[in-house]
Image 1: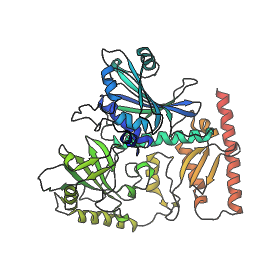
Image 2: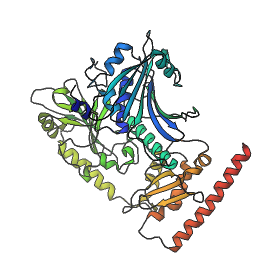
Image 3: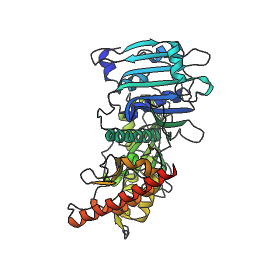
Length: 493
């Protein structure tokens, strides 16, 4: 395979999308349990594993999986598409890739893929059956039926280079959040009660200690309780010149001002995810955007369209190798532009106008008497929903993220107005949460109370002597409370 092509595949992967490509492979292997695991040296991330209990690979199968030219035949239910997912996704992030696997009735097998630079082809090496067997046995994972696979990334280029413990912990918190959010979104149709169980955890290689596993739950971009417009959702009727039906389409209008994680994808303003959500075999390939049909408009922020690619879609749809972008043929673009609602006959333009009208009406409704700076990351969805229902948000002030950071011992919190962050001291996380935590939404009571106490200091451009004295007083009182709680915990130990 051409070296330039090898090195270009996967360039658009992020850590989360690369992990999702490996999880796709696990799902194609009919895995019932999948674990994304960060390996830590103390608190420093040094490797990443994706572990599954799928049907595994024997020697012949693993050689095909490690070869760019070894594309296999795909079934109608497979999420794989190009035959390069394991290699391209892994090498987009890491210089060394280890694969250990065991198929039913076969010995364990292992391979290593090494990339030494952009000017050389990746090299594949064979690992002994004994080494592969040992690594599978050490995984602390229930390989149901004795089969399964571990893909491990080492020399990960996207891991932080800093030696600061606080920065490493903060990066890991963010990476866990991003991976869980991305997997929860792109796999949301597959993560039902009967579907595969996907978890994210970490393991300290010095002690062997595993963190609590965080389940990946579905994040449904169409999971509103009540539609923003009673006439929707509505099926869309498309007509192509060749008479084919490459996609099925359904138009939605989200309820305004929602704080649901399915609307505010990744914590971003929900309006940013207007547009087309494209699925193939129930796997989300594109989350929003209008695919060159139109540019985004603020008034269309509640408009989302579900598109499911059918068996004949290949003639009209091109999917990029990272499964994160879609290109439509000119015929399909034209058909979407001229689509009509099957039940009402509304045109696509009229549908967008309806969505814009609901958005406008929501902005004209009576304001609530209590106004706060909007909290963004760091709180569970249910708490963010409660904020939406109980208070009004400052319209001219950026939303605030609530995070953990390493701060001086005499600070319980920090108000970072430059980055719009309310930080809690990582030194006190264990005692305040009640134990070790990788949950970015932990300590919701403490965080909510602190936000309500301190959010007003993010409003405005000036902090005077009075405000600084107030903050100093809150620091003193909260530090005394943390000290008392620490002493109580030590007394119970």
